[in-house]
Image 1 (cartoon, rainbow, N blue to C red):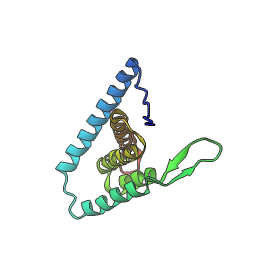
Image 2 (image 1 turned 180 degrees about the vertical axis):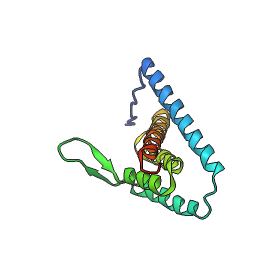
Image 3 (image 1 turned 135 degrees about the vertical axis):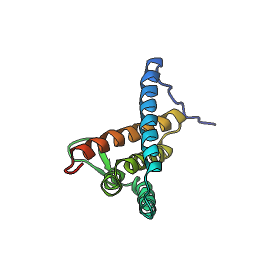
Image 4 (image 1 turned 90 degrees about the vertical axis):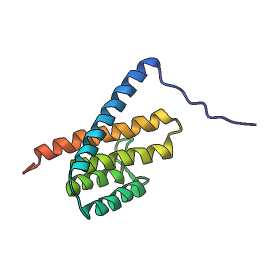
Length: 138
């Protein structure tokens, strides 16, 4: 007997939200990548690549938060560490890599993977830009 997983497609009105988030995430990622290309990182990019790889590896580890039904992934801390060590643009790229890696493990449909990648990139973009502006000397 062949069991196929039945995946519900989003309602037509949900596609608009999906498209807006994906478009905003792609724009955030494009802005960050253009800034990365303009800057010279030297050997620091190797350290960043190791951090990005470590983010993907520890992305499977999480801690359940008390009193809620939520979990906090260790990869969230790695994105923040990337922000502190390398700046907002590389943190956005780490966020996108983490979103893509996490989606590949749990999502079976392509549009969820794209949405999750774009959403994490957008969240990292907004959070890292705000932190950079509010941080002393930012």
